[in-house]
Image (cartoon, rainbow, N blue to C red; front, side, top):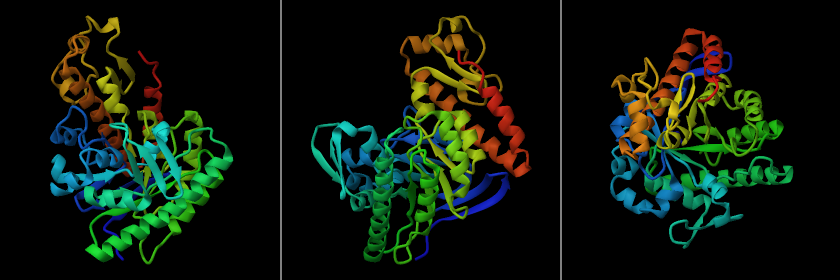
Length: 385
């Protein structure tokens, strides 16, 4: 059975690589950053505004859309693309991370997760098969397998059990996809497997090899993700494990680092061979008045910006900076609880991420990524203000 995706590597520079992920909704140039649209929207921005930041693919949240408004409602609108009016590529996560983050409302069994809804307390069963069914109805270009995400610092036995269960669920997800294709006709949705293993490098590499070789009657994963990072382990350790593990992940498929992270984390990830990233940080921080720049973070509520007539970042082409809005004015908006400040900060932060991955891609194509990485990391290490 032919996968609806192809991944093409155009250039490498060390372990870093520039490529193209071909999807049913158009090509995605990699490395790429996916803004998070948890409930079908990137908070405060219109789809065309998200696109203007350089985003080519966005992420939707299976768990939240499953509970509200329901996958069938989304499907009746032609899937998440038609529902949200996003015209580019789209990925939906599977709910595994929500099981981690909503641990007090969730119980894991061999057959999946029993969630107690954070909305009304009702119980819901998310099995590997249900995760595939829901994501098929949502209709994103990329669906993620259901996985088990152990917290940072979990005992080795728990991490090993998480890896083993993730593998069993991976097989069930592929089988569910195969059966649905057979019954309904092949659809244009690919599935990514999720590599777990905590900070155990050998376990991570073994799991990467196992998932890369997993095949169910011709059905294989279209890409491979690294899950379970940035969940409590020291950032330095995460970077070290990434540098060792990511280059070992099957180079013929897209590599996706889930839920990471800060601008510096993206640069380190790209240097390790990662192609795709997502994180709520730029949008969540923007709504909270934390503005990311090439030289550190601006916490706009600080009194030092009350009379500051500079823009957030000189030379930035986002609407806030290109429009000439001063830090003093933006601080005034934020302190007055004006929604415009949250919109502008969100737009600025996502523009920074979009520009950062585009510049990294060009540096790889030009064979100067090492210089780009060193210069960018040095500037990003400026003390926060």
